Image 1 (spheres, rainbow, N blue to C red):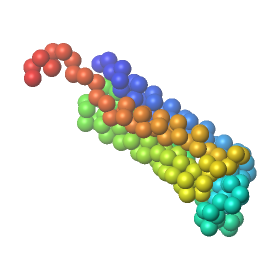
Image 2 (image 1 turned 30 degrees about the vertical axis):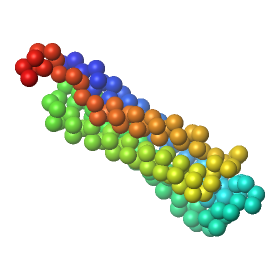
Image 3 (image 1 turned 180 degrees about the horizontal axis):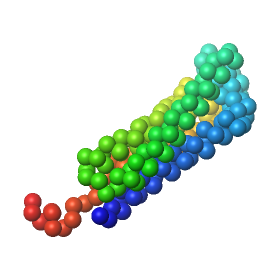
Length: 172
């Protein structure tokens, strides 16, 4: 059977997982650089002078550490879901719809975790709650937004089904 849409779906899920793996490994291999990012965003120490939202700042180092470890775990989870999901989708590309749909669950889970990290975590919480957008040096919004959009588009692509062959649609 020839399933180009299924191949594309497997490829995009796998690529998302590969991206997540590189981010996860980067956070482990360069722990301090990314820890500094979390520290400065949560402490809000590079936002505008006179910022009326400073009551939101978190200046406890243990909270920075817990938050950063949570991000690393979430990124590792995203990577694992995407890599496993991409492989399963590829292996089941010629399977019946029910079997293939079960494999899609891994991709949906990956994209949900990706949206939780980059949309909820970085855009909603980081950029808006902790006013990260005000920082010229510790602002991840411009990186997070395209990723959140990409995961949403990939999730929509994953939900698509190939059109039925002409001979099947003629019977309806």
